[in-house]
Image (cartoon, rainbow, N blue to C red; front, side):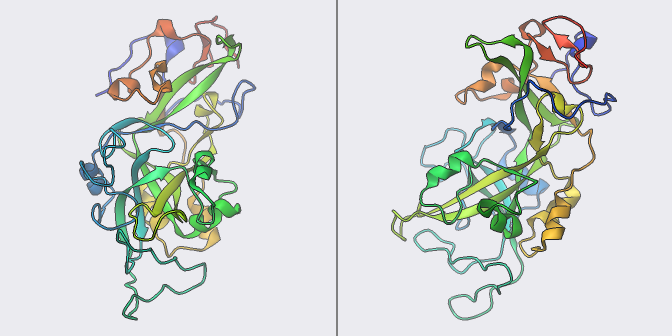
Length: 345
């Protein structure tokens, strides 16, 4: 259990019932959302939470079973607790797909139907079963569109904005039929100080861990894609790459003191519809992306250890000592920690 801080009022963590009415955006904030989150639950625990039907064997993405050949020693956090998930890493993702006739290594996955088309028949000519299967699989963070010439484009496509995900060509088809949930404990965001500078003369950035107040698992809204590597033979198990992007939205009041964007965190009553690959009505999808009620999260200032992807462990979630905070705006009070005590708003 995360320890509770006993510290001055000026350094309270943001609480779900915080009543301050905060401006939408602050001039010291950066525009882009960060690219880190924590996902420490074991696959077997997530199976129960998300009512998973398939986890291993042939399927989209990678088998998360410890010791799986899909990892081959490439990622020490593969299939286990990861407190510092970063772009290009493989992480657990929940998705639903209609059963495909050949989702096996060494064979091509047939293309999915475009909007308005019927699902393809299997190799024997029979109709593909119409009940989707819910998977927990390892996908690579950084979406690579099916039409991309190479996978490097995924480095720039870790986030999709809720305002444009249904319009941009890179995301539209995925948003209509390949939606997913990204299990997480919470996410990291960096607050740019309005007063303090780093060694390079830029605003000093303070990392925060934003997490559900009840300590439960959350589901970030995402979209995923399947990309065929043209440089690999069809029999190569790595010929197909499954990738995902996290959808972001405007930060809710309180959290916008840290950053102006946040992941779209879907409440459990939207999970089934979000995952349903047969739900392809744009208005219905847009309705699922409406901002949930605010006040579900707490924010904890953490140490700079999270800045390096080499650091990984539960200690990353521990509150930073008060004497390490300089020029940090308290999300709950607006007071400046470590550089005066006058509220900024």
